Image 1 (cartoon, helix red, strand yellow):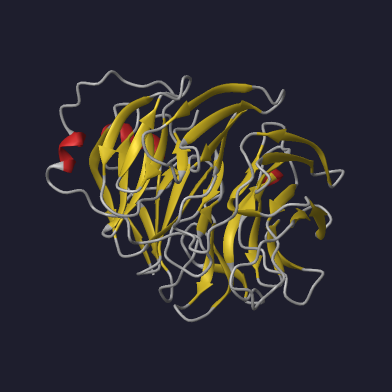
Image 2 (tube, one colour; image 1 turned 180 degrees about the horizontal axis):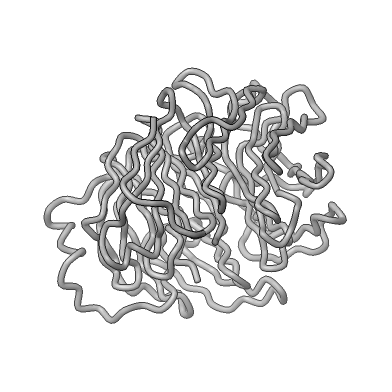
Length: 397
């Protein structure tokens, strides 16, 4: 079912990130809605605007950080567990609340009145000047131009999945929508819809479908429990894992590379698998390669550099830089001390966020955030926060 409240606009940016309470450690709908007192942060802020702000969550609130010095520009109380994602413009970020998605003006350090209501807010995807929200509790996909947020709540186009599920969707430059298929009990694959939201093609050979990434030439990759699906040139191709169970649930793509970086888990029965291999999915050859990084990592560890290089934050405290074409680690950058992933995914653990040439890494054990120049490995800035940080995100350029 489709509801249209605006004509589709033109398109250009990509990124993924996840949010919904599921066993896949992707996100949660338990983010606390601010009280009336806390909501005062959204109006009459006297603080000076922050250039290129970052936003990090902590238990009970948010820190807005100066993008250069990393100093705290504002501490905004926000009860319970919170999630934060880029929204696709140079001013706002997207928060998750029990009622749905909520927009924050990070530059002016204010919560706004702009909300997209619905239970269990899930993935937030930016691509081609479109932001796509997936509400797990209803299966609704909401699409808008993030640059319209500067004028208030943007007009949207919506599509409702056949059944609610933990899903993700992306709209391409030609208006086609790639969206997951599934129910609350079982996720099976993807469907591709045209601009009028009529079905073009589908593939249901993707048990446990989760996450998406876009590679060079707008090729879309989504993860399965036994490989990935690739949507390219109007057709869907299945690429199987080298093991019977080889789950890929988190991916990072780059417009500079035809190769997508993914995680890789092969122990179906593990309470918490600590993988030491990552996957490289070549969308040109439709082949997958595994790379040993000799340390474990988590779902907040994957990113891409400005030249398309793969970046993996390991539990050894290092960023492992991967040449995707060569399929090997070329160097490492020491950032934090060694750490171990907690059993509960909501608990703080180091997280990696990349914006252009800089990698930002949180270190909950020391309450620090570090800014690292990706090309040189040099630390550009480091601060100690009052409270241990959890997730980190920021505005986009």
